[in-house]
Length: 530
Image (tube, rainbow, N blue to C red):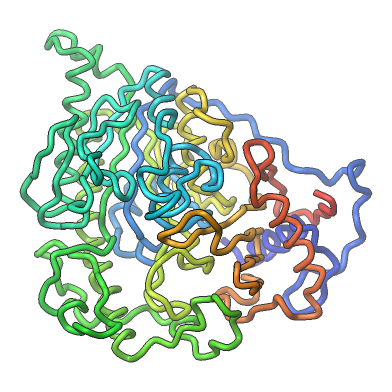
């Protein structure tokens, strides 16, 4: 995308926040305010869109903790899905950690509405999510055969839940915690029966996914002479890979073995044997926010205030290495799965969505992990191909994981299981760049009863309020690595005020009360009072 287009998009996004007339380097020029509701400056009308295929097959592929920075190590995925479809360049996980993100994919809701706020403890994990009405139940009601394979929600399989089969799934093959993270020995619940297939996690999940789809079709029409009828019924398959999430078993040279007894003894993914040490000694990609030293410039409660030891930094490098080595198997297996659909003739009428639950940082802003509000963890890869999707296009209009659920339901002509917080993104794939407001939030990993932070992302701006009282504001146009906190800059007082109001307005939004309007990114907009 040309630089001028990026600047126009971000300048308009500034106005979306109701912030016009700010001065300073890289800021939008002063504008006269609009006339308000009577102005001709309004949200963009949703473009007309008609799906060229009625009830296409739906394939959602998710990986675990993959950063957008890691996509260079999935060249086949980029080619087979991104180049034959669209790549979203501004995709966001509003709550960037496993369970809330996956529950959003199931519900089309933000975490504060679906209730699965975190991964463990009160209001966290599998027990916290009501899966009686989900994407799966709605698609099943709409006539789809529904198939699940791989990781579900954290803590699924624990506390006597290992034989649970959630409503809405015709074929169910989920990994059982805590074995989910054993790359060489995960157990699966196969339609209520516990099995332990042999092999490497990513390969086994692919094999299980392919077998599950075959079996699901047999259940539709068991008679051999009715194969054509079985093939005609649309299906939805969600394939959830574990890589590159941390896991075991710990192997020689891994941080837990190498740095035992220190803060560097962190968990890392386990690559397939053929990929191990392919990227030995490969450094973490250098960016200005990698291990920043200006720690005191960040407020109390920010992970940027951490001071990693050299051992921790060395461990983070190994983590990066194991992550991208694990990505190699993902790339091979996803390509194999897509090739199987192509060979069967089904790919042509299958809408494919590839994404990650959240992003990940390996030392950026001084931490190793997810959960926080910096770009490395909020940003997720989202690629889409298939019927109704233009080929070889980058879409800069923001998309979130609640939008993915809403989009799949709209494409299928299915009813939303809840009033959706997300939008159908299909009409916007060919539209000019748009800006929108996205609420962001997170809870501590083991306690979902009170937020850790909340805020909004609006085009160029990321604004966050921490429960410690700290506030962070970044202009990602002039500061793409989020190193210069503008929250206390007197020149940005009005910006802070506007974004604080948006945060307050949308912190507990629901359904149509959530921000769904799009605004043309090449027009100055004044949304005072929005």
